[in-house]
Structures are given as structure tokens and as C-alpha cells.
Image (cartoon, each protein chain N blue to C red):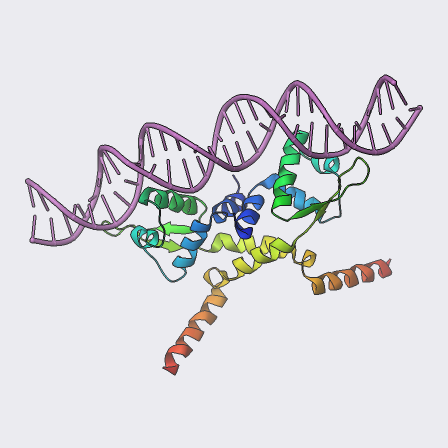
Length: 108
Length: 108
DNA sequence: CACGTACCTAACCACTTGGTTATCTAACCT
DNA sequence: AGGTTAGATAACCAAGTGGTTAGGTACGTG
């Protein structure tokens, strides 16, 4: 699977997005991350592995803890990808787009 | 499933992203959309249903054709979501962020 | 009417996903 | 050494996904 696909796939789960949101406040252990959720440890472990494979988190090791840190670089690609569609949802951008097209037409 | 989740899930497949890219050039029939891909009609139909459920396309009906049109509005939510993480990948933004935090500290 | 074209639905298959419980390793603390 | 805590792994299950083939519907045309 390509980078963008695995990033989108990782983001498709609300639990994983909540984990990312939590990590914006700083690194956390697996236990801390699992606190807000009513699911088992192994389930969290699986989510973390998905996030790690997508390159969205990195994991260290300190004694018996395996602290997770956010790595947002894959999200830049997501933002860039979405921005390419801005003119299709943004009305003012659409008008600008139409203007530019018109100008191009006039050049011919 | 919430809106953002189903949007991300829809975008996780390269075939579906390619279909969206094709639709930026204007509406297309199912046949036209399936042309670039080496998969069966029903497979395309399934992809289109996923995109439709995610609100990324709308479908009309003209005689025996069911033309698809792009609807990018769910992508705005994606862009906004990703932008909230910009400071975690953008070095200059991170520096600005640190500066603002420092200023806040000084206010106390 | 008969035929071809565009598209959908149904049934099926292999694989993945999100969850579980049970069991293991590794580190810390008495 | 024994017990507790953090975490991973394994085995399992139900549901979902991405693909297939076969068959059905709706429309335009000879």
C-alpha cells in the first residue's frame, strides 16, 4: 500500500484520530493513551501499530514503558492532497478559477 | 460511522482517489470512469457506492447512463482537520507556535 | 419485437479489521 | 526470589472490503 493510502486508512478510525489528538499535548505511554477508551489493551496496541506503520507515531522505550510520540509529517501530504480540491468546495476560489480560465481563453 | 471517518475510509483506496481526480475534469458515466482500470464493472459500482455514501459524488440519471459528478464539500472538513496539525510538521509554524507560547508565559 | 448497451444486484471468495481473552516477556519493587 | 505493572503476541471471531461471475433491469435502435 502506498503512503497516502495507509495514512488515510489510519485516519479512518475515530479511536486512532483521538490518539493523535492526545499526542499533540506531548508524548504518552500506552496506558495513558488507553485511559479514555473502553477497549482492551491489545486493541490499543493494534491501533498503535497501524499508526506506527503509517508513520504517524514513533515509539521509544524507557524501562517498562514504550512512550509514543506524534509524527505529523504524513499529514502534510494529506493537507496538500485536499488543498488540490479546494476550488471544488470553495465558492470564492471557484470564481477565481473561472476568471483565470476566462483569461486563458482570451489569450488564444 | 461519522462523516469524517467515512470520508477518510473512502479516500484510503487509490482507485477511488483516481476516480475523484478524473471527476475534477467534469462529470462522467460509469463506463468512462471504469475505462482506465483493469477491474470489472461491479467493482467500479462498489467504489462509486462508497464514494456516494461518503458524499463525495452525486449521481444523476440520463436515459441508460448514470452520470457521476464530484462533490468536494466533505474534503473541506479533511483539509481543516489536517491544518490543525500543521504546526507539528511545519518547522516555521512550529517556531511561531513556540514564540506565541513564550509570549503567553510572559503575560503571566 | 429483438438486440445491444449501460448499469445494478446477488452470491460468492479471500483477505483485512476491530475487537476479545489468554498467555507471554521485561522491568521494577519489596 | 516473588509479585506487580506495562506492554506485546497469539488465537480466535464477527463484520467489512475488494474483487469475481452470473443474471437482471432499463433504455435506445435496427
